[in-house]
Image (tube, rainbow, N blue to C red; front, side, top):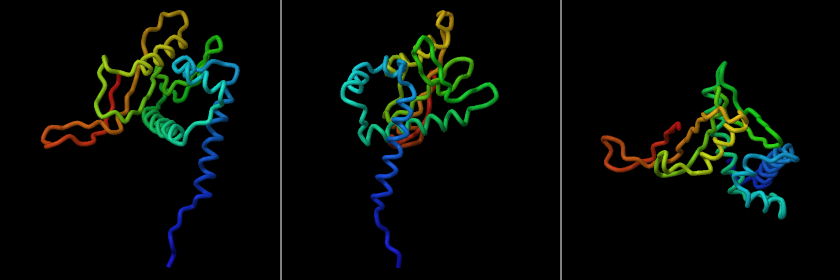
Length: 172
């Protein structure tokens, strides 16, 4: 009878491969300032002075968010929509999740409650603003979109006795 055992060497190899992919992505942008450097200056300084070792939790949260965002973007991708679009202006670079005439940023969250315009995390909004500015440095463009993919979203829906997990999305 076959037995099931944990493949620790395979798991460690996969983690090493993922870390290598993430560090390769990071080194491709050397010599530029990334939008995340502007949004998270403390992290940028710590990375520059102490190295960029991510915890396993940070790595998997990043990868899960990237995968979920890629899935949503791929589903809406069409003739007019572009996915994972690199942009750069004056040494500041970023990657748009989707380009639909305006920059579209996709964020996934484990928040229990939906955001409103007043409760959106400010760094989500700032990221979209920076992408809008990078798309049109003249300042004439004033529009971008933010898609929030709720992974948990505890809501009591009509006909339910208690709140349950109800994944959903909002667009701002």
